[in-house]
Image (cartoon, rainbow, N blue to C red):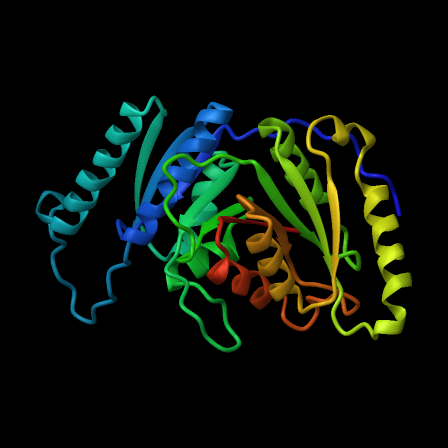
Amino acid sequence: MPTLAPVSRLSLKNILLPTDFSAASRAAWPFARTLARIYGSTILFAHCLAPEPHLQVVMDRVPEQDDYARQGAHWKLDALANEAALGDVPAKTLLDTGDVAVTIPTIIRENDIDLVVVGTQGRRGVGKLIMGSSAEKIYRSATCPVMTVGPKVRPPAEWKLRRILCPVDLAEDPQPVLQYALALAEESQAELIVLDAIPMVPWQYRASEDQRSRRALASLIPEQANDWCKPEIVVRWENPADAILGVAQDREADLIVMSVHKSRAASWQAHMPWPVASEVVSRAPCPVVTIRV
């Protein structure tokens, strides 16, 4: 397995904060603000109005000045931007119309977005993502990393990145997610916990499997990482979602960084690539950054 390349400094010039003006969306703001201050980012507050229904009968369009939904959204976006300005965070606003699954990737591309920060109420369901409908679409369609603030995350008086949990899947390429977690840890001088969850291993094979996993993970972490984050390797024998949530709770993680993607058959995500991450998002005590690889 190749050694991880030297860690490059993370650039977060533009952070997108999609909002539907709900309490869940509001909960994401403190985390976006903290990152914006650390990285000198500009926040883009964006709201997507529902697309107009198709009418069988042609009717005159309501003038924009009389479109109260659009006016109200403009006012609310401006209020968010003004609040950001009071906190010394540069902010812009964008109001669009359409389904977020279509508009969000376009906004990301046209505005050079480096990170999306979104809040969700975390609805649960069998065989589907455990997020509200809009957040689910953003999570699935975003072409850059997404930080999701789930319903179990308590609003912080001041959010600090002291401990980052990075679960990896050695059956896949863990380098993109490890690079991202290491870059965040370096910037904040945070501890980094690298987790390998290996379910359904008989007890008599666990010692050898533990050694194999630790050697493989250690080979992926550049030696200079010890200068800033003291990486710790943890191996658990549980279902991946339960292992991630258990370590996050026990170690009081401030952030989870994990990958999501269509996995190969050898991977523990092979048969359900989205539900593992969404189960974590819905129950995590801290924000979760997901990186599509």
